[in-house]
Amino acid sequence: MVRALIWLQRASPEQVLATVPPEYVLNNREAYLASYNKVKDAFSPDGQFNEAGAQNTLKYLAAFNPAVKPAEIKLAQTYDNSYAQKALAKYKR
Image (cartoon, rainbow, N blue to C red; front, side):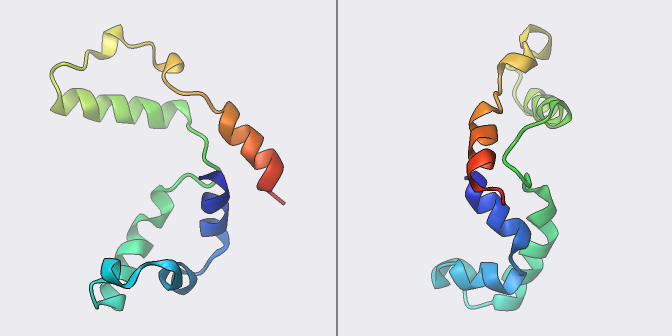
């Protein structure tokens, strides 16, 4: 995943599109490229999570799922960046 995210940071939208199976594009390259250009900044550039992102995720989960109780969740225990950090050491050049 980290390797793919690094590639996405360097690739042009057209290069990304060239890797997408045709059935995902639905015969509309322009719409796919427009959609990709709107969401690409949402991807983590290096596969790591940060506390603000985790807090936002928890906030939205709690808003839509009453079973999620933010006060009972120790957010720092819900994610670990060690895997991404090891992958970055291997692939980031």
